[in-house]
Length: 361
Image: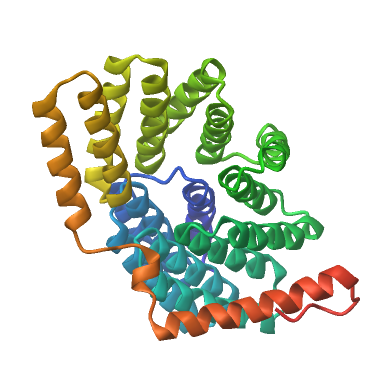
């Protein structure tokens, strides 16, 4: 590598790490880095800059742009023969597609990624694929299956001593366990994740998510006094990092908690903020939740006009074309899920009996 390219690589690597950890540069700054990488003529640098750009667009809710940049990065790495980087970029393609609600494309990307990772006995990226598949099941509302995939990813990550991967798996496990009502397992996973975040792992999104899940668990247990400061902290952390998705979900949780406390003004303020962020990011389900809760608050204070307006808004949102993963699945996606499930069962069996050879995943 030319010395100037080497210097640019050293400049890009920490930016790419921060971007992958939820703190990317602004898209305009990322575009400037991409221009410099293209001027170098190095596929490695171009692909890395494209990954940074993908994270930058995803951070601001421009999901189609994010998918486009991640695909370009994957193609750049593939054409340069950089197979591991190609797999990692394809995993990001899958994540971006899944966040946008396109489960078919997400599963296609992950199935291809898993095939490459399996052939090279790359357990790190096998674990990352299973983290993604678990998120598909979160979208289905099948929290038990999601938990199985995320626990499998954690089992793969632990022997690798990959702190960041372990932390990501732990937070996913915590989320699944919380949604399944397994609060003890959720708290155990959050404690482990928090230990990593206090030490070797630096990810502002995950730090906020730990607070958010702790607050949600306290709310589920009826401990509103404990839940509110945790949820406020989660919002503050997401706000500092300008994480649109995190801010919207934290405000929704705060709206629910304040409503149960009887503080209607605080509840409405948080719910209206969540609704506006959800509109900007195209988060239909969250918009529906906000509209429904706002209608209930208006009805409870006998404001019939506002309640009717909120209910009309809710009806309009529910009349939009369905974007739920269940309704987007095609036969191709169903077959891909079956393939991934079969491979995960093989891997679980090998892990259970601690076979010495490399697992077939």
